[in-house]
Image (cartoon, rainbow, N blue to C red; front, top):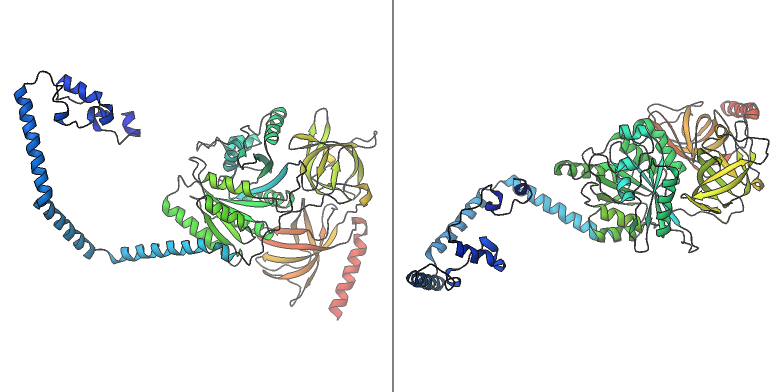
Length: 606
C-alpha cells in the first residue's frame, strides 16, 4: 500500500496484496522472467520465440500455434494493403464528433483563451524590448573594485510584512539547506528566545554568505544563538573560502517595530533592498509602508514572492497583478521584470538602473526559483562609493556590548577615512554635547581580527578611556554616537534646517509640530520651529514642499549637511535633506528662539 502511494504508474500486480495468478506453466514463466531486456515477467513474448524451448507440450500443438501465427500475419498484411473498413469508419466518426463539439463551444471560453494569448504575446514583447526601454535610463555608476586583498562586502536589507518569510529565506541562503515548512531555517537566524517563540523578528540582525570566484555560495549552517566562539569559527571559515561577502540584514516586519526597520534602512547603509511578499498573503499595509521607505531613500529594490508551493494559482496570479500595478504606479515609477530563468537574471544584471525591478517567484521548501535569486545576488556589486582616503575618520555606533575580559565593545560602520587599531578617537556627543577621548584598542571585522577598518566596512571596536582614572561604562554609550578623529574638531547640534516633502498627513502641519526624525543612525523626536512655505499660509498638507527648521527635543546630535532624513508620526510621513547645520546647544537655544521670533514678527508686519 505504501509503494502504491509513491509509484502510481507501476502495474496493478505490484500494487495488489496478492501476487498475480500465473496462467502459464512454470517453465514458460521461467523463460519470461529470464528475459530482462524484454521487460521481465510482464513483457509480451511471442509464442514462436519460445516454441523450441517448450517442454511438456506436444509437437502437434506447436505446429498448430505456428499455423495460427502465419494466418494472422497474412490477414494483417491484407488489411494494411486494402485498408481496414472499421478503422476508416472510426476515423470518420471521430472527425464528425470533433466538428460538432467545435460548433457547440462556449464563446466566452474562446474569448478568454484569446485574451490569454494576447497577454502572453505582450509579455514576450516586453521581455524582448527590455534592453531598449532601459537604454535612456541612468545606469548605476558602480565604484571600481580595488584588488587590494580586501573582502568586498555587499549589503542587502530584507524588508516586508510580518510572516512573509524574510528570516526563512535568510536561513536558506546562509545555511544552504531548504526549509521543512515548520520553521527549521528561521530557527537558525533568530537571536533572541522570544523571537523563536513567536516566530517574528524584533531587532536588526546581520548574517553573511560568501561568494567564490565561480559565483557559488559559501554557506555556514550554524545557529545564531550559539556561543561566541562557535559563531566566530563559522564566520572565519566563510571568510577564508570567499572572494566577496553578502551581508543580509534581517529587519522586523511587524507594525510595532516599524521604527526599528526604518532605523536599519537608514543606519545600516544597504546597497540594495529585497522586498519579501508572501504569495498567499498578497500586498498588505506594511508591504506598502516598507516599499515607500525604500523608495524615499532611493535604494534599488528587487521583489521576491515566496510560498508559491502552498499558494493556489489564482491567488498567485492576483498577487502578481497587484504587485505589478503598484510598481508601475505614479508613486513608484518602476518597471517590473519577471525573472524565470538564467537568461532573465543576466538581463537584469546588465540593465541595472533605479527603474528596473526584478521579480522572483520561489519557494524555500521545495527550492523552486532559489537558483535564480542566488545567481542574481552573486552578480550584484556594491552601489555606494566610500571615501577611505579622507583625512578625517568617522565611525557610527549602532550597538554596544560588554565582553568579559575585554570591556566595552561598540559595533557600527565607518563612513569616512580609515579607523586604525590602537588610535585615539573622540567619543560623543554626550548629553551635554561634549566629546571624550577614548582609545580604540582592537578591531574585528566579520568576527575576524583586523588592524584597519576602511570606509564603508562594518566592524566591532573595543574601546576604553584614555584617562586611567575614568571608567567608561556601557550605559553612557548609545546608538547614534560616533567615534571621530580629534583633528576634525567635532561639534554637536540641536538645530538644523532641511528641505522636506510631506508624503502623507491627514490634516495640516503647523509650527511646533513634533515628529520622530530618522537621520542616518540618529532617531530622536524633533520639533518644527520654523516653516518656510512657498504656498499661501504656513500650513503644510500632503504633497507640499517647504524649508523647515528642526530642533531636537532630548539631546544634541552630530548631523552633516546633505544627509537624507525621514520624519514620521502616526500615519504622517515625510522625507527631506539637510541643508544647514547651526552647531548650537541647549544653552543658547533661548537666543536662537528670540532671533526666530523677531524674524517671524517682521514677516507678519510686512
